[in-house]
Length: 533
Image (cartoon, rainbow, N blue to C red; front, side, top):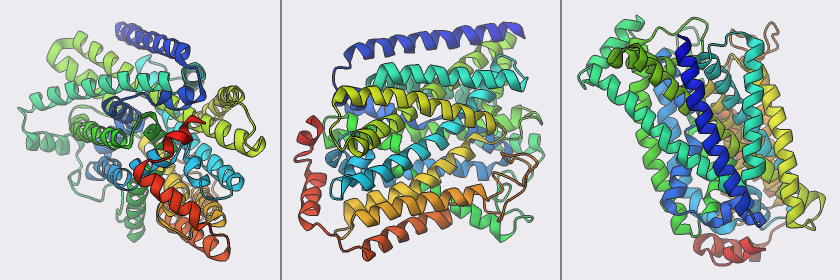
């Protein structure tokens, strides 16, 4: 057994060494703020498409969805579908317009035709909250994975592993900036696709490339006859109609969340033209779509071939265990060890890369929106801004580490769904109104962001996620007021409503700025000017 721990450690450390090398190389190239925040806008559509894939296929999609499918079959696959369909919203409504009208962060688009300080404050706060929720999920994934790879079961040691992951990611962001982070994403996207494809082919080969044999074997092995039907996770008899509402709520958050995720929106700024922004989304969708088909086979393969231990109630270790089983099946014990080490190292690389992207999004939002424009009223130098971004990366990293230690029993995909709900409730209404509604104004933007954000947080805090259920974050306490785990169905419409109400109650209206923004977002005229100063 111990040989595989050594092997996975070696593989993993070599990945870290390569990526740290890339980061160091990138830090030599960072001359201006545009280099640090947007990679000097020098990436091609295909490169950025790979990086989008790398940014998006997180620990949640790899470990979390495979575990969900292995445990709850059909209901788990809904996550794959939701995460993928979401890209259509991003492609059709947001990608190109954002690229044309912004500079470095999401708030640039919102602040363009409003009074900048209140809007930037709101957008900065919301970016940081979404990123921290998302970081939580990656940290939990890291803890579960390292425990499995290095054979660590002691909770205290797992906590140290989470601290180590946090420290590494801080190094990536502080030194590499967007350029280093993007190359890490690209390397990782290629590795992850390769690893997932390999397992998928092996699983299919075991069942003679017959999907129905595989699904039959999965149903038989789990002893759950309803594995292929809806209702194992949501809408069970115990939950009644509320389970179905929870499911719709989850779907809403997944589909609308992507277009409001700050670390995805930032990606659209790293390309030279709007055409490249569209092209990178198409490449991203292609890569991600194929990847989610792989998760289907991996999830049901794990259900058929792996006994998920009772300790892993969330199923976060299903994919690596499947790698071990299928490798051993084809190439003997050594094969299983090698494959497990490989997949583990890839999954870990995934976590590091996504975490770096998130930390970059929230720290650059803090430096560019809150520090430069709110505290210093736009009088900060570029140097000061980048220094502040680096310091805030440290602080945000530390917060994520602390919360990650608390949330260890949760399924990773579920934690990400919460981040999506927060993004869809606060950021999305503000972005869409800002791009498409003439009358929209400062009061509207601020109330949309805070209304969606606060209602979403309150719904989560008093839900079974935090207290009063088996998998709750705070064990032994019970202050939950309702059974709804996914807040989206209430908080998303509320965010849109708050934006509408705030706009209607305020007299402010700037027609000329809207006209300028409309021209710019559709043609890109003036965006280059905006990006240079």
